Length: 398
Image (tube, rainbow, N blue to C red; front, side, top):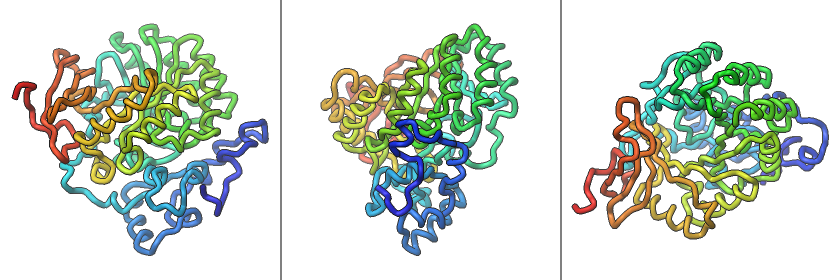
C-alpha cells in the first residue's frame, strides 16, 4: 500500500462508520492527471517519465487517490498499477499478436446520433458522457474516453425520443465514460425520461465507480434516486472488478448501498496479461465478488485495441485453458460467468476447446443477420491468435 501521500477518503474507517460525509465532486479534483503529479506517489526513472509524457499526450491519465493507494509502489509489475498507470508498452502499435483497431466493437457503424448506439434490435446503448473517474489503460473505447468527441449526448431527451419510437428496444444501457460521474440531478433527469417508456423492461447503468471511486455511492441522494427508479423498473449495474485486490472494504460498502436500493450488481471483467492471467487469481476474484453480493457475469477477451492489445491481450489458446483451470477451483455460482468475445459481428461465448479447435457460440447478432444468432463456430487455435479474426475456420472433423 502507498504510504507516501494518503488521501483523507480512500479505504478509511471514517468513510464506513459515519464520519464527515464525503464530497465526491471535490475529491475528483484531486485526481492525478499529470506525470509530475504521479511522481508524488510512484517512483519513475527519467526514461519512464519521458515515455509517459508521450503516452499521456495521446491517451490522458486520470487516477483517483483512492485507487492509487491500492498500488504497491515498490512493485513495477503490480497488477493494479497496470490498469491505472500509463506504461511505455502503450507506445507499441504493431507486434506478433496481430492487427489492432480503434473500434473493435463496431460502435461507429451503429451510431444513430445523440449518443445512441443501436447494434442489437432489443438493446440501445446511450453514451451519456465521455468522462470517467479513472481512465483505464485497457479501455476498449480508449480512442474517445477523456478526449473531445462527438459521442457525448447533447440532449438525452432526444435520445429518449428515439428509444420511445422503437418498441423493439426492450432495455437501455446508460454508458460512457461513466454515467455515475454525472451530477445526481442530471441522472435524475435522464432516468425520468426513461421511466415512462412502457416497452422498456429494465435499465442498466454501466459504471466502474464501485471499483475505482466507491465514495460516489456514499451520496444518500444518489442511492435514494436509484431506489425510487428501481421501484418502477428493475435497475442493473454492470461493473468491472478485474483483480481481487480491488475488492476493498470501501468497495464492499459501495456495493452494499447499491444493493440496499434494490439494484442488481453484475461484474464484467476482462482477461488481462499481467493482471488476472492466472487460474488462482481468477478463482479468487470470482469468489470475492460473491462474498460482497456481486454476480460474476462476463469475462471478456481483451479486444485488439490500438495501444492495448500488445501488452494486455492473452492468446486464446492460453486463455481458454486458463479459464477452464480457474473454473475447476470454483463452486457453482462462481463459475456461472461466460467467457466472451465482444466482436463486431456480435457477442460470442467461448465454450472451450477440443484439441486445437476452439468452440464458440454466438449469443447476439447484428440487425439483418439474425440467422447467425445461436450458431456454433469452430476455429483452429494458433500460438499467438488472440481474436476471432486471427484463427482460421475449420470443422470438428477436419
